[in-house]
Each structure stands twice: as C-alpha cells, then as structure tokens.
Amino acid sequence: MDRFDAMQAFVRVVEAGSFTKAAETLHMSKTSVTQLVQQLEARLRVKLLNRTTRKVNVTADGAVFYERAVRLLADLDDAETGLSGASVQPRGRLRVDVPSPLASMILVPALPAFHARYPDIQFDMGVSDRMVDIIGENVDCVVRGGELTDQSLMARRVGDLQLGVFAAPSYLARVGTPSHPRELEDSAHRIVGFLWARTGRALPYAMRSDSESVEIKGRYVLAVDDGNAYLAAGLAGLGVLWMPDYMSKAHEARGDLVRLFEGWRLDPMPIFVAFPPNRHISRKLRVFIDWVAELMTHHAPITARQEA
Image 1: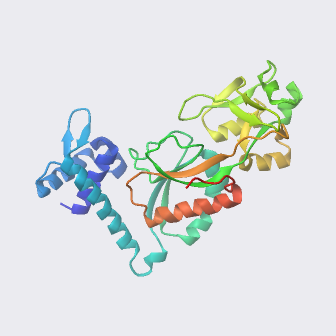
Image 2: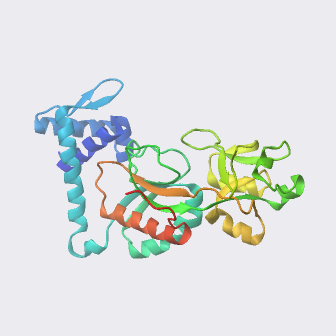
Image 3: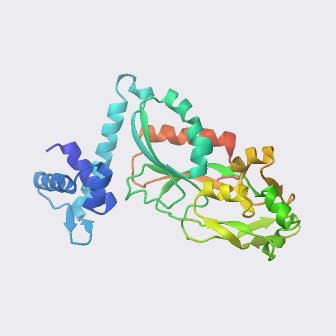
C-alpha cells in the first residue's frame, strides 16, 4: 500500500462524502479507492469511516486522522515545491472555476503571461456561472461575483465590478430611449433576465440617484444563466442589460451598446476567490490568487473599504 495514495483517497472520501465522487475526482475506480481506505484502516487498526448504503460518515478517530492527513499532504506539497529551484517555480495542477465572461475577456487572454512566469502550473478550468460544489467536486478555488452566501468557505476579495445599464441601438430604435429607470417597468420595454445560480431566478436591480432609490425587475423575452449568452442577447436587441464595465467597454466604444441613465448609480459587485476551509493553500494556489488580484487592479479595482 502506498500510504500517500491511501491518505489522499481517504481525504477525498471525507471531503466528497462518497467513494464514488472521490473516485471521479481522483480519476480512479471506486474499487481502488475503497481498497486504499480499507488498507489504511487495517494498517492503523482503527475504523476511519462508517459506511451505509446512502452515505459515508467519518468516525471520531477518522476526524482526528483527517486533520493530520490534510496537514501531512500539505507539508509534502510544500516540501516538493521547496527543493532546489522550485521555491520560485510552484508546480502542479490547479482545478479552478470562473464565470464565463471573466474567463473569456480577462483571465484566459492574460494566461500566457502567467504561464511565462509559472510554466509548471497546469489548469483544469471550469468556465461557467453555475454553483460549484467546491469540496465535492475537488475544486481548488472558484472566482465569483457577488456576496458569498456560503459562509463555510474561505475567501479573498480581489476586486469590485463597476456596473452600468446598457441597450443596443436596435432596441432603442424600436422602443425608444428610457429617461428614468421606472420606464423599464412599462409594457413597451424588456430587459434581458439573468438567472442567478444560487436562486435560479432573475433578481431586481437596485439603482440610486441623488434624490431617490428604485428597484427594477422588468419583464423579459429571454432569461439566461450564462454571462456570455446574456451579453449576446443584449447585443441582439432583446432587452436592456445590467452589466460590468469590463464586459461593456469595447462594445460601448464601437457603438454596439449605449449607456443609459447617466446620474444613476449601482453598487459595485465584489469579486471573490473562494476556496475550501481547512484546506492548505498550496504555493500554486497562492500565486494564482495573487495573480487574479493583480489583474483585477487593472480591470476592477477595489473601491469599497474591506471589513477587517
């Protein structure tokens, strides 16, 4: 039995909550994972997991061993990257998940510079706006916009997205240019709906001027759950968009989108890099988070004071 493989398998089963999910994330068969955990239990002469047909629970001894195994695996990772010249060259595979527009417009175009700096880091990048089970899917971190609802996660705030309201010239030519946000509730106007992953529904948008505050929900012809599709719908004239400036900037400059409601403000949307609790932050993950934060200083710098 390879004790490293056995500990890694055990840790993944605890975090994923099942042998099947652990096997999928480790790219191993369920039988192999089961055998490794059984061999580990035999070597330690303690029961680490309670198994039923529906779920796997960690025992009291297993919980203690899990904490130690996580630290040991982290120490091994640091030891490997700390040898000879590796202290400045972190390496290994990172599993990350990022929103589709942020990936296509900012992160992926900037990756050649990151790769030149850290050539031994390999990415498995999920590109979506869905809710990701960070622990169950064995994801190292996610980059997300909006306030974090899962308080169990660790997170670092890396930016603030400045938001605006936009529409395509074709849309405005068809229904007219609204002068007040409340006009978007009129029968003639439509928005493009965005289905937020944590609720599965479109949410109202809060806007403020010097004299009043409003919440606009509007009606839509199309609602989507992907940022790139959301932008495409607006460009096609299907409705009004609420959108980060980094997504709209080039289209506004070309005249593909028109900014609406000058003098009205939307609160910035914070961007976080979130990662599992009790998970060692490896050097490769640390440099990735620092790199994302560095990128955001150019595209979406933090404007609000962070809480201590």
